[in-house]
Image (cartoon, rainbow, N blue to C red; front, side, top):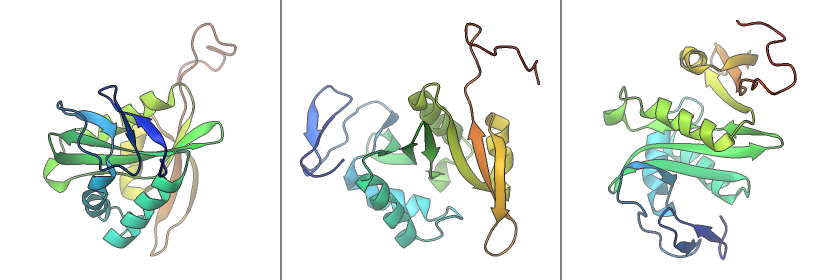
Length: 180
């Protein structure tokens, strides 16, 4: 959202991009991340191998905020930021450029919750992510498939993973390939 644009908050009220944003929900859950929490989100994202530093993470957040097709979501529990992810519409599909969970909250399924929330927001459109070797199995366990790989700086590989909504019984091609 850019200065002067208006967004609808979860409580039904609207806010402008250049207004000071307060936490808009009382209950824990996924919501658009207020810009006031960008620094905290960048610190969390600094652990991501693809970003590697708070400066690179802050730049990635800023770039997604400036992108009219990008949104940033956070799991807020009161005023505490537990997890954050970015989502960008890319043509007919969506990209998940990054996802991170605060170190003290890891292992409690907030990462999976973020991915499920992102998939829900995509509807039936495909979504892609890029993962290193350590994250590839995690994405595969949720239903992503490898659609490409390239050498990573420093060795190993980066994988492009894709998720596609299963066909519905009324859609053409349902059952054409059998079950896997």
